[in-house]
Image (cartoon, rainbow, N blue to C red; front, side):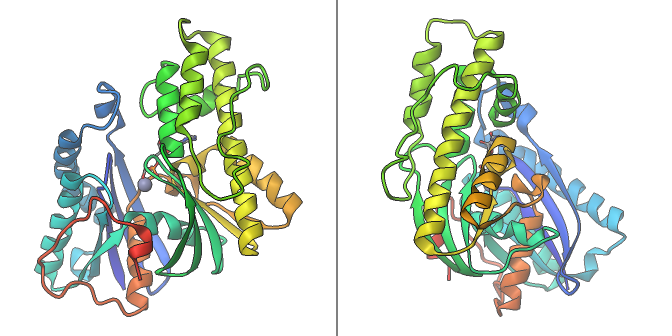
Amino acid sequence: MLILGIETSCDETGVALYDAAAGRLLAHVVHSQVDMHEAYGGVVPELASRDHVRRLVPLARGLFERTGRKVGELQAVAYTEGPGLAGALLVGASFAHALAAALGVPALGIHHLEGHLLSPLLSARPPQFPFVALLVSGGHTQLMRVEGVGRYELLGETQDDAAGEAFDKTAHLLGLGYPGGPALSKLAEHGHAGRYKLPRPMIASGDLEFSFSGLKTAVMLLVRGSVPHGQFTADVARAFQDAIVEVLVAKCALAMEQTGLTRLVVAGGVGANKQLRAALDANARVRGYDVVYPEPELCTDNGAMIALAAALRLRRGAAGGGTHAFTVRPRWALEALR
Ligand code: KG4
Ligand code: ZN
């Protein structure tokens, strides 16, 4: 069963071909709009929608050429239904429904976070259910208990900024451009640990909630009045990364303790962060749990995770819309899924 997966929720156009019968990702491509939005310091929704319109068909066509598969072989078309930018979501949804209608196959609307959550199942060493998932992206920071496909319990989440948002806002304060996560992380490698000490928000709250907006403010106070430069910037980047990583690791450890589960799955863009991975691995060794990460290229937004989620839902008997009337859900709670 061949599934086309389409992701257009934000600033990446992702397209993937997944062979559900073989349980294998055949190929995927992602076009990032980062260069286009950089000049504005953040994603401009209208520009994002228009770029998805431009990219989607050529990307999909290239994928079929590259894999030697035919459009007519498709048995389902999956797309991100939400959450995300309304206009951007509509591009993927209308493309998917048009193609599915033309082929007479189902179109499946997929929850973006479910895609992230299940993306480690694409790895060479897929985790077994149940597991705890740490979702750390530009828009979300959540700990979930995952019993199976569609069985998600929210354990705790951020009360304000998401982890990726904190990375991006701090990077902006340090003059690192957009999105700043990867650049800040690279810079932090040259920073001296302990040169500056930043707060660890809510680390001792005893629950699984997060708060990151104060961290960005603390960085703002630290750099106020000084022009970002060389070693100073690197030291601040290091202090920020040390703080956020320490909080994320402490909350993951608490989630493992509270649930009694022994597997942790990390998903979302911040999951690509090297220092976070090293710290989680070290904690897992001490505490005796397993950590699984998606391949770094599948941590950020992509169509492969959308195709995979659709494959798993189809296996559970999901039918996909029989009609091709559709909607998108810019706001959509993951726990609302069944
Ligand atoms: O999952 P994702 O691609 O998109 C959303 O659904 O939000 O995550 C993007 C976020 C951005 O905030 C980006 O700065 C952050 O992930 N990010 C990183 C790293 N790579 C991406 N943050 C820290 N370290 C990284 N290596
Ligand atoms: Zn995402």
